[in-house]
Amino acid sequence: MGIASQTRVIYHFQFLDSARPELQASGFRLQASGFSTRDAPSTVTQEVKGRLPKVSQFFVQFFDTCKNRKIKCDEVHPACGNCLKHGVSCDFESPETPASASTPSIAAPSPVMSSASPVSTPRSSSNSSIMPLYQTPTAMVRAHSNPAVSRSLEFRLLHHYTALTSQTFSDTKEQNHVWQVDIPTIAYDAQYLMDAILAVSALHLRSMHPEDHSLIRASHGYMASSIAQYSNLLNKGLSEMNAEALFSTAALIAFQASASRRFDDDANGTYTLPLAWFHSFQGVKTVVLASWQWLRSSNRVYPIINSQPALFLDPDPERKLFFAPLLEGLEEQLATLPAESQPATRQAYEHAVSFLNWSHQKPIRNRILGFAATVSRRFVDLVGQQDPRALVIAACFFALTKMVDNVWWLEGIAKREVNGILSILPQEWWPKMEWALRVASHEGPLNEEIWGSTIRSPHENDSIKLEEEFEAGVTHHIELLASMVNGYVDKPMLEDPLIEEPLD
Image 1 (cartoon, rainbow, N blue to C red):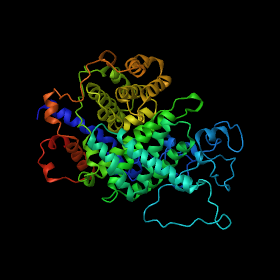
Image 2 (image 1 turned 30 degrees about the vertical axis):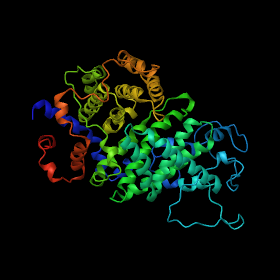
Image 3 (image 1 turned 60 degrees about the horizontal axis):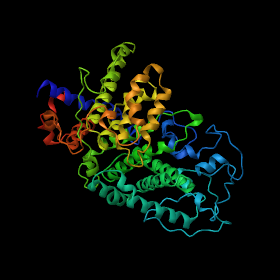
Image 4 (image 1 turned 45 degrees about the horizontal axis):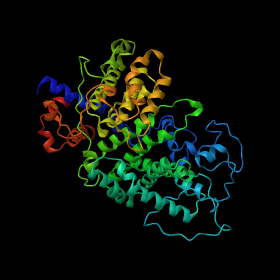
């Protein structure tokens, strides 16, 4: 193998630095959900307390009171304007008074019960105990519900998912079948996956009917319930029995994280960084690597994983590729950092820019969206610290999504995030945003002048011979990475000529 080939192969494996600590540390299973135990908000319910960080509050923020959310309350009874806007129960409402069946538009949904669950007979109000308001995420979405309304809503959500939502996650017929048929089948025995399906479906419907408060409550309620169950299972550990369902749930959480940004209300007009987007997609990667020994033989979810193109990232040491200007001044910046943090920081920037160059050359959805999962943990930390260089790189990633925003869960994301990042970026970095702003603000189909280079067709064969030789498929790459993380090695892998030098 030539030196150039070795460099590219080794560079491909560098994104493991974000997965390895998650899998080796005691808390990796929470990281697999896209969340961290750090900085957990005190306002979440007891069941998920300590599992959801501040950056993931988009799942539960609408269940906080106006006081906890630091929002001025208009004190209108029986429900204040903020709670009514978001379709949630208000503190002014009596927790002992169930929602009236005459107001189904704001009734909370009841999660689909397992087929093994016994059917209980409703008790009269005189001898039934009062359920504490928002006791847990699961109880929260069951509270104040009318059974008939809840069943009707759940049927509506499930039908919408199988008929429409499931067809928006992929561009291929095979993958669409998986999302439409196989994933709901897996959910028969996984309540958390069913809740995630209903949550994403409700969010999709909300994008069509933004004033329907029942959809707002359903989306947040079902997702909170799903995350609580999902995190609990991740704490117990991945297994052959739950690998498919946990992977599917992780993917739906990532879709929810992406789509929810369009509905976020930034407090006081201040832009908040989309860290939950990165954490959730990184969570999918972690689940795949940790459960690959079972997922690789799954006929149901394998088509989704195998659809991802194998990475072929050029480190561009001579700084000649399109996004090379984003690395200008890097050496001077690194010189100001402690010596021990310089290698990881350099790798974080260079790897992220290499991914931008790779996806910019052939801008298809599964290439572009891999950015959030592939960048290193250090890069995500830099974004969270509002590091200017990391923010500009992230802005260019979101600008890339403009090319593939013809689906509801990506619509408007590019313009929102690029403009938002610009609003918190130091003025001296604004010139680096020129391309991202031009692309994100463009109306209509993108042409090569706006894009800045030739736009290769999704069906065009790669012209670089080395890439053709190396691109053995994402499955082969995952095998290598999973073996490094989990410590298992298959016999065919021992004979692979690509392993020896990169792994030494």
